[in-house]
Length: 366
Image 1 (cartoon, rainbow, N blue to C red):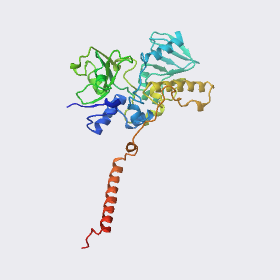
Image 2 (cartoon, rainbow, N blue to C red):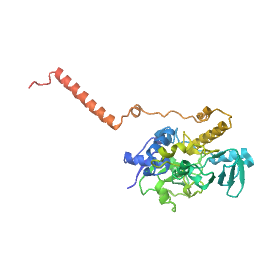
Image 3 (cartoon, one colour):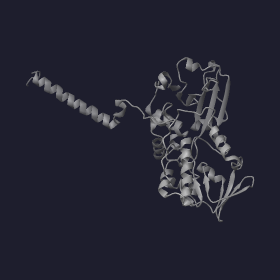
């Protein structure tokens, strides 16, 4: 039997049909890193959620990680940067070889073009480093790291409708769907800002993405008459290999985590995986790129070492507002604490009742 939550009414504050805290935790891991719980290090996942501001911040569609999209698409960021840089941007030139044996670094591409530089920044997921030949070879720890940090598995599906019927019913279109037979685990309203192209976007995650990779699912009710369907399988992308980010399996963070950001000669590493805030997101990618650039500036003697790890300034246009919680949420005890509180309350209540009974002569001497 399929169980589901609907997080739609009253500005997405109402949740229905939560079956168990264990299933909530499993689904939370699936949604955040598009992997199964047995695939992910608990230590790494706790760090991942913490550096995104906590469980509420990372998950929220209001004042959180799922809140906003770019009008016109996030691809405009790359396109605008390309306009500024002009012909210095080289497209469709995968790097296949990096040679550091000479005075400068030589970079060779798949179409046999050569580029020469004093330093190199690699901003691809660590696992894609296996597509590049290095001379001299990578150090042992880096070489083993890149074979041990896979990317998550996710397929994004978009179902278009004639009208946003969920809005007409005072729903926001965001759902969390729990059930092995349900291909889609999470949905969001993908209607354009001007109300055109009403759509629901859904995410097929982790083992379901691998299981259903060759099938197309109209996951919503057929009676709602979708008019079009699109999907994107990031696992098929040769130079992505998955999404949203690389994750650390059990035991890997403690053994190899320290080398994730360590330069190898004149090669420095960026990419969202190397960020310390909002790793796995575009915000983390920007932070990591700026940090890697400052590392090179320090190596060139242009800035002191203490300026490498500068914190990212708060956004002026979209500041992160404090997460508001109720008094009960702020002071909710743990399970042992709750049991102690119940026991202590019982003892105090029994003592108070006994004292009052004694004062009023309700206790009889035997």
